[in-house]
Amino acid sequence: MYYNNDTIIYFNGQFVKAAEAKTDLYSQSLHYGYAVFEGIRSYPVNGGTKMFKGAEHYDRLRRSAQMMKMPFHYTTEQLVALTYEVLKRNQFTDAYIRPIVLCSPNMSLSKGKECFLAIETWEWTNGYMSNQMNIMTSSYRRPNADAFHVEAKVSGHYVNSILACQEAKDNGFDEALVLDCNGFVAESSGANIFYENEGILYTAPKGNILPGITRATVLELCEELNIPVEERFFKPEDMRGADAGFFCGTAAEVVALSSLDNVPFRKKWEDTFSYTIQQAYKNKVMEKPYLRLEEKVA
Ligand code: PMP
Image (cartoon, rainbow, N blue to C red):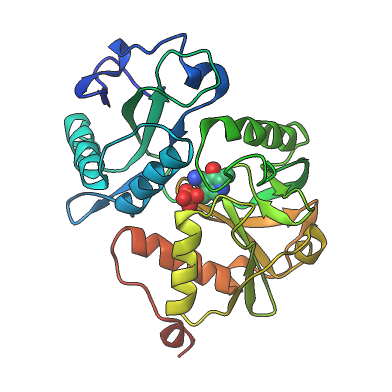
């Protein structure tokens, strides 16, 4: 359950009970998937709570709304402050935060006339993801970048994610590897992807993916830890049987892959650069020091 009778959300200018908030059945968001949203994590840091890259997420929310031509006028600073207030009112530290910008009733296919912001949150008790995932190449492709603004986080795009994720589950896998419209590896249903081979990490370039904030963090960590990384197009066959692979995203964090299309990744997870990245990410979000690779090797 995401909320109970006591849960407070921010909705359109007020802090209200989630159980009592109402939205409109005639909204463009419901009928056409015309809404933009974010997924943010907060972590217990120094006895309080801290959103990881909250400003970056809200900058992306504002960019997404702008690309969708929605009249959304909150500043990033306002959005960050409102979110901390929602966390405080719910007394959450370890939480997932889901802001969404909804549009007003309008059955026509014109841009949104009015927007409503909701900031929802629920406690995140999963801990850091430790399981490894078996994934399959999906028969669904990501939306064509000529058809959608794929770099925007738009509700309607996630119908594609539901199809791909459910197909994988129906076939006994944990997640889907989804290709772009040209047949190159793009991402999963809700995370970016990296694979590692012979000491180099690879990830899909921007253009046909949601360029994740976690992906950017992984690239920063590679730089800091001197781990070679290349952004380039690649096929599932380049990745199958490689040394290691992982998904990364705000909710997924850095999660190891054990196989792709039933072909296992070769190396023991703990012996890979990917593992080093996973550990560094875990410490970074909690604002703990993380080892430099040279220190680890020495
Ligand atoms: N790709 C997709 C399709 C996603 O839904 C997400 C999750 N927002 C990501 C990538 C990862 O993005 P982020 O690291 O910003 O959470």
